[in-house]
Image 1 (cartoon, rainbow, N blue to C red):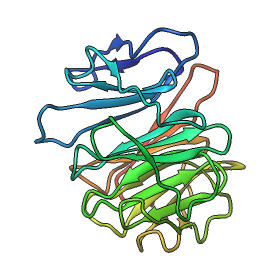
Image 2 (cartoon, helix red, strand yellow; image 1 turned 90 degrees about the vertical axis):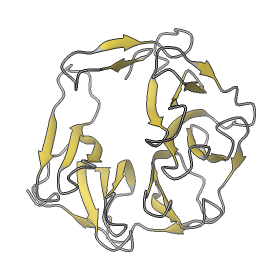
Image 3 (cartoon, helix red, strand yellow; image 1 turned 180 degrees about the horizontal axis):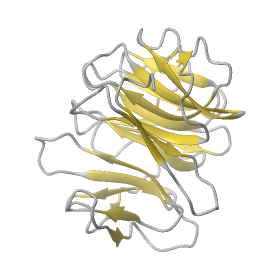
Image 4 (cartoon, rainbow, N blue to C red; image 1 turned 180 degrees about the vertical axis):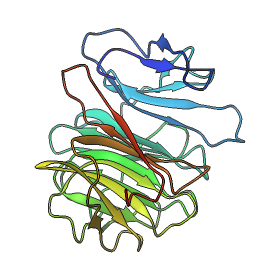
Length: 245
C-alpha cells in the first residue's frame, strides 16, 4: 500500500479498517506482509516499510520495529516467513543493488545470504511449504532458487524472455508448480511445472500484473492483480484451471 499502514478485514473482506505500521511519514509504504504459519503461537505478522522490519503479535493492532542494525544496503522490500519454522524470516532490500537477508531468531539478528545471487534487488520471495525451498525474484536477474535454506542459489529462469520479476507463488500441494509475474512489454504470467527448471508464458493471461497468489484450499485457482498505477483503478482476475484461462 503506497500510504503509511495497511488494511485489515475480520469478516472475509466485506469491510476493511486501516492500521498504521510504525511512525507516519508520507510515502513510507508498507510494501510486504507475512504471517507465521497456522498452529504456531503467538501468531505473528511481519511487515516491511518505513525502512525497517516491523512485528505484531496482536494481529496487526500494534507494531514494534525489530530494530535491524545488521540490515543495510537499502530499504527492506520483499519478505517471507518459512511456513515450517516461524523463527526463519527472509528479507530482500532495494536500492544500491540490493541484498538478501535471513533471520533464524524471529528478526532479532540477520545475516546476508547471497552465495550465487547476482548483485540485484529482490522484489519477491516465496517459500515452498512442502520442503522450505526458497524462490527469490529479482528486479533484473530473474528467478533464483535455494534448496538449502538460502546457503546457496541456482539460476532458475530458463524460458523467460524478460527477467524483471514482480511476484511469485508456489503451489502448496506440488513443489513442481510455481507462477511468476514478469515485467516486460506489459506484465505477464509464467508457469513452471518442473520446480523452476523451465518456465512457459501463459497465453491469454491478463497483462500489467503486479502480484499472483494461489488459493491454498483449491490450488487450481490462481488470483492475479494489476500492477500499481496512479489512475486509482485496480483489477483482480482469477483462473480456476491452473492459469490456462
